[in-house]
Length: 363
Ligand SMILES: [Zn+2]
Image (cartoon, rainbow, N blue to C red; front, side, top):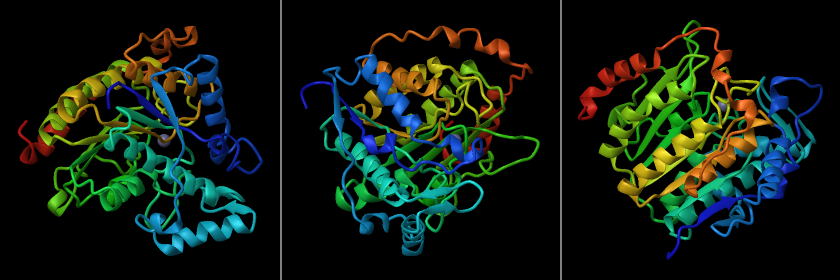
């Protein structure tokens, strides 16, 4: 590869299919095709799609055998069956429409393409703009707006079909803990799962600081739960420990489970990030990856439901990868003035996590 290129994995179907059922508003109605439509329309308007450093790629077409790398046949067939009868709501947080099965399978193909084009050196970095999201999906079941686990399935694909045996680090910056994703690799030391997520310290949830892996995988599951109303600056406090761990782990590929639901205007998440948070994160992880793994990074879209914010967040990451300046929209300025409680716990949380994982890392 002679020049720096970025692969964008896109497909119009993501902007038109898998429409949530009425009535609105409901939790499930936020995961709708407009998420991708707004992103693609804005990228076109900002002349980013035509940028000669970007290459648009299509999802790899896959058959059900590929899905079976990550999912039971029962789960795959269940989604197919519900799609075939026109759809329905399965559980409280998952809907299926008539075209869900094929779109969810295409999303897996999108994540596969994103990993492939980076490890085959077709591009330097990639960004898969796919939906439905995947990080809550489990081997046996759909969960939390996710049908199939796009990232887990893509990792298992490159392990089997691309002879990629090297270590992989997943950094999950979605507002929610990727409980499905964590489970796939909880005992696997060849995949590091590092999650920063909003945590309800009152109610408790999965994604606690003492979930650190098991057996061979001890120490390679790291959770940084941060409080509601966390800001860009709180996020930046998390970079130091992440950098230490990534430097020691030395992955050959870094996958970002790219959720944008910590964005201040997100209807589901409660944090106060702006597009600058994602810009600075992408710059940070790009520089680190250049030292550790030839800049091999794949961003895979997960959650993020603010139709206003999504295009700006995606743009922020692309701008960072292009090494161009970010101009923030005016409505993002002074967002931290919305903060009701001034809690500075993030550094403390990172320190406690450090103590817990110390036996497994040189820190
Ligand atoms: Zn989320």
